[in-house]
Length: 142
Image (tube, rainbow, N blue to C red; front, side, top):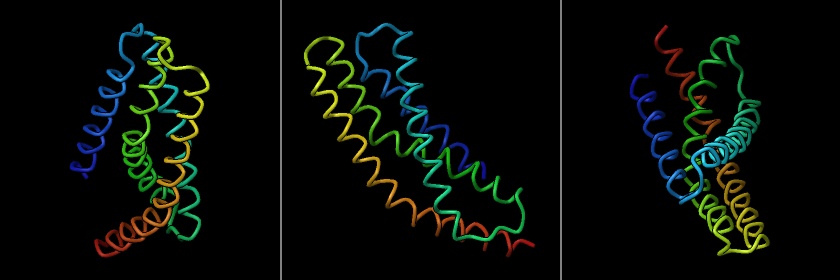
């Protein structure tokens, strides 16, 4: 478990730093707002995917379900964020610097949503398998 927590922390550190620098010369307060907004969107999408993937699994109790959720959702939020947040942030920066028109930013946003949807579809099956594996490991410990 400590390895998973360290992995989550490192993933988020890389994600936040990469996204921060992708936003370029923007004011620090605006960078923070954009990073938080993007993280919320990715978190919600990942949480919905987790909810869909757990529908096929029977948990022994709610505590076990929450435990697994508290591991998988942050882990996959960080991973999903690495695929879309820095790319989208560069588009925000280009629009902010007036190098890119707003309609190009919209196209970039649609592309990011498409990439995120593909990731989430693939992850849904993987999350189900991972949850089942964790439950088997937990059952073996008892």
